[in-house]
Image (cartoon, rainbow over all chains, first blue to last red):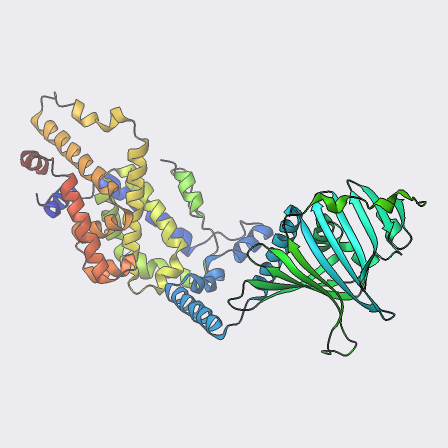
Length: 292
Length: 205
C-alpha cells in the first residue's frame, strides 16, 4: 500500500471557507494584540513579576542545558577525576568517613567481645614502673592485677557490680561501693579500660577521633584519638579483620612542635582466648576484711 | 476541548469568547515579529493545521494553541536557522495535540458515528461517510506515532518539505530526519495495511 499517496489523498489541503474564516479571525486578533498592546492593564506587582520571569530574562540559563556545554562539562569532570586519581590525592570527606566508620566498627566489636586479656605498662613514676594485667573473663566479670617488679601487689575483682580490692602485701580485702573510690588508688591509670563498655564509651564520647592511617596492603590500621581531659593522644592499632584493638599507646606530645612523643602507657590486648573462672576465686587470706 | 486551560498554560488568555491577552508588553522587535515571520506563511500554517485536524472548531483551537506557543518561544524562533520551518512544525505539533485530545475525550459511540449511518440511501452521502471513516482511521494512526516521528512524517509526506528543513525544525541531523520519516512511514504502512484497496478507492472519490 502506498502510504504517501494515502496520506496526501486523505489529508488533502482543501481548506473549507468556514475553517479559513475562523482561523483568519484568530490570526487577525493575534496580530492586533501584538502590534497594539493594551497598556496599563496590569498592577505594579504583576509587572514586576512579568519582568522578572519574562523568557528573555532567563535566556542566559539556556547555555547550562546546551548539549555542547553538557558534553564539555562531562569531559572536564572525567579529566579532573582522572587527574585526581593519578595524583593520588584523597578526598578529605572520604577519609573522614573511613575514619569514622572504622572507629564505630571497632567500638562495636569491643562491645560484642566475650573475653580479653590486656597487659598494661605504665611509664615509671618516681622511678618505679607499674604493670597491670586486666582480664575480662565474661560480661560483668573482670579482674585487674597491679604488679610492681616481680610481684602482684593489689587485685581488683569486679563481679556483677560488686567491687573488691585485695592488698596482697597487707593480706587485706576491701569491698567498695563504687568505682569512684578507686580514683586515687593504684588502679587509677587503667580506670578507662575496666570493661568493654567503658572503652567503647570513651571512644564514642571522650576521645576525639583525629584520623585513621593504614599502610597499603596491611591488614592493620591506626586510629588516632585526642583525650582532651588528660591532655594526651591515643594511638590505637587495630586488626582490620576482627576490628579489635591490638595495642593502645597513650602519648604525651612534646612541647616542641614535631618533637618526639613521650609514651605514657601501653596496652597490649589478646582477645577472645579461653579463660578460666579460677581467676575470679579470692585467695585464702581474703578473709581478713578491711573497711570500705 | 479545554481552551482556557491550554491557553493559560501557554501564558495567553484566549478562547471563543475572550480576546488574547499577551503575557507581556511587546518590545519593538516583537512588533515586527508577525510581519516578518508569520504573515508570509499564514496560509501555510492554516492549511498545515487543517490537514491534520480536519474540523473547523478544532482547527481554530489548534491554531490558537500554536500561536500561544509561537509567541512564548519567539526568541528561540528568531535565533533559529529556519524560523519558518520551526513555526510550521509548532503548528503541526499543536494540531496533533488537539487531535489526540479530541480522540481521548470523544465518546466511543460518536467516534463510530459515520459507521452507523451506512443505511443512508443517497450514494454521495454514503461516499462522504466512507471518506470520513477513512480519515478517522488515518488520523488515529498518525496520533499513535511518537511526537517527533509524527512531525517528520507530516512535514515530509503532507507538506513536501525537504529533509534539511525537517532536520532544522526538529533540531536533529538530516540523517536522523530521514530515519524518523522512514520509520514513521513503515509504521503507518503496517498499521494501515488492513485497509482494503477498494475502500481506498471509494474514500478517495
